[in-house]
Image 1: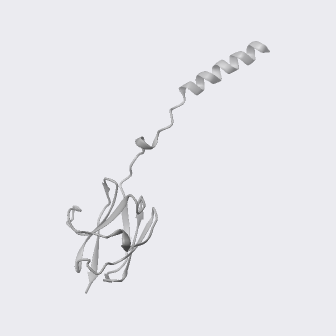
Image 2: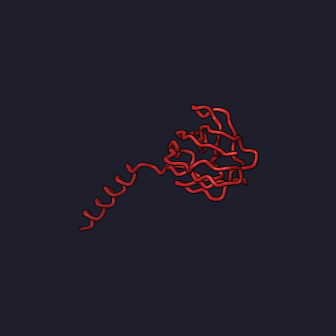
Image 3: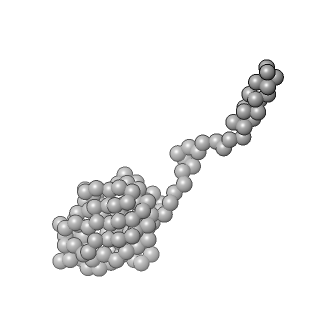
Length: 123
């Protein structure tokens, strides 16, 4: 009985040693944000709602409007424009200095840029 107990401990210890190590915060997998839907055009001072996946949060993300189709350039919404931000939905107030007209809208989380959607700021 004692030999069985000792043998069991040795095998269990070996299995634990073979288990994969936990990954730390520095090894986190980053997922590309994906936009699914954006609300209809809004005037300055109005509300825009962005729905998607992997949108991160306001501390690591930003919303870019008026960018090229590849997401370069454009206007970045200031942090004060954020009403709420979850991993699946962002609600913003369109600032008074946002560019008027139709353009591409992107969400950037860390170094990852989302797919783009068309959005228009009305006069």
